[in-house]
Structure formats: C-alpha cells, structure tokens
Image (cartoon, rainbow, N blue to C red):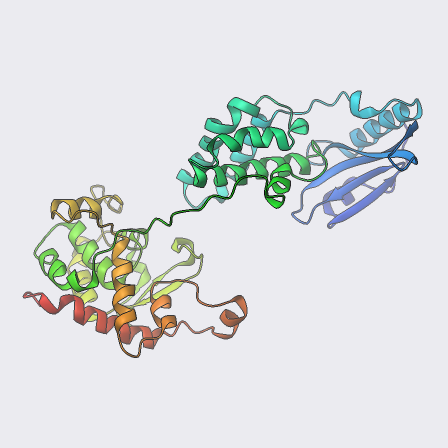
Length: 394
C-alpha cells in the first residue's frame, strides 16, 4: 500500500467549488461550473519534447470523482508518473478502459430522463442517436471521436434532413461533453469546432408555417363549430377564443381557473417559454366552461378516460370531419395574430403577449415586468365579439 500525504481529503473532494484543485505530485481535482468533478494528472515524460522543444508536459484524465475515489486517483497518478519517469508516454500505455460512445450516450439518456418535460422527448433523444450515430461511431471509444467521425455521421443527412441533423449534432455534443467531464476525453468538443469553423454547408431553411384559417372566415367557422356537442368542439371553441396552444388547453385543470377574477393562470411548467401565463376569461369562454364543471373531472376537457385529457389529435380530427382541410389547430393562433394586426390601436406588444410570446430584448423585458393584463383583456373581448358575431346561438 502506498503512503500519501496529499492536500485533498474525501470531504474536500465532495465539497470544493469550481476550479482546479491540486493534491500534490501533479494530481488535480477539476470541478466544472456545472458541478461535475474529474481527476487529472500532469506528468512530464522524460526525454520527450513538445513542438517548442520544451519538456513534454501532458494532462491525463483519470476518470470522474463520482467513480474514482481519492485513493484510487492517487494510485493511478503514481502509476502514470512512474511511466513518465521511464520515458513512456502513458497515453499509449494506460490500462484505464475508455467506454464507447454508445455506452456514454445511454448513460446520459438515463441520467437526463427526470429532466425532460415530456417522456417522448427523452425517447426521441436516444432514438436519433441510435438511428444515425450508433451504427457509425457507437462502438468507438469516446476518446477517439474527433472531427472526421462527427462529420461521417452528420454529412449524409445535413441537407436532406437538416432539422434532424442539427438536433443530432446537439445530442452528440452533449454526450462528448459528459465524456470529458468524466475524464474520458481531452481538448475541445469536435462538434463545437465543426460548427465554429463552418465546415458543413449552409442550408437555407424553408420556414414551415402552420396552415392558418383566414381571420375573415373565423365567424362563419365558429358558428358551425358551436352547433357541435362533442368535447373536442368545446375544446376547439375555447382554443379559438383564447388563441392558446393545443397542449395548454387540453391539459387545463380546474384549479388554474379563478372565476371571480375571470382569469385562467397556466403554470410555467406547461408553457413553452417556461413562464407563467395569465389568460383573461371573456363571457364567451366562461359560457363554454360552466357546463363542463358538472362532469366533476380533474381536467377541464376530459377524454375517453376518467380524469384524463383528450388526445392532442382530437381537435384536428374534428376539423377533418367538418371538411376543414389544410388547417392546423395551431393555425388559429395565426388567425388571431393576423386579425389583431389589422385592428386600430392594438400594439404589437399586446398582441404578442396575448399569444404568450416573449417580447423584446432581455433588458426590455426586465423593465416591462407587467403582462399588461387589462389591455389584453380588452383585446380578447374584441376578438371574442368578432369570432362569435355570426353565431345564432349567442
């Protein structure tokens, strides 16, 4: 057993803040700003020189501090120093097993599962890597993946499947970042290098707009919609009037509504921008909601299963049954936005805030803390008045 008198202790290894902390004899604990902890050892290989002709000093990763204990790190560092003293470069003689790309990717996927808002995202994350990256670089040790390997994965799909390729690049970068934090890689992330050097061709993206109904057709459409009894029709009427996103409406729960204040507060975790959104309730919206209270469900728009919302396809299927082709439910937000831009005295800011869009720069947003609720209430009243103007059932 080797005797060590290093500066670090088990407790310090666990608690030290970001930075590079020396234990002595070339062993360092590196704590990233993210909190990830890894060991490195700096050795000078006897008789070897760098490009400037100076003695070759090299850092080696010894693994993450969550896996490798302080004692193990000291033992490995000692082994590396012995090799370097004999003129052997530890890079080519290390006995540490470097995991392959797929192993690390699957580990990252499991570690991140609790952080995804939606389990589907987690599945898509690993599926993209499994389809495009694993067949080409999955078995390679993460320490060997550099620019050529990354390009081999991205180039074949960069132009035809550009959105997928961009997501794939992001996911590969995350895997390689984690590999580095665990001490299995050194140097810059090759995905970043490729992006910064603009190695991949520029792809001109065609913006895919959600097919929207012309705002001029909204009253006639709404009047027909109001004759339907299905729950999907109620949800779609409410979606048209609030100009909300499908998921915000379908997952609405009764505790989010304040009928005294005429307010629906959608919590941050259900919003795209991760920020609470208040929707002023108009008389028409309340008229849709009131009869639904009798169902005593936990969700406002209940589907086939008790206390569970209806499927996110339900409203789209209703549109198709009504022979409304080429229009998406999301497109009703665009109809509202187009209508608002035609209205006198409606500022862009009020219209955008009504759609829960982020308005202005960070500085502007810091000063404009108000969500301009009363002005938005006025706008939603006008919109409701317009939408139901041809409704004989009013």
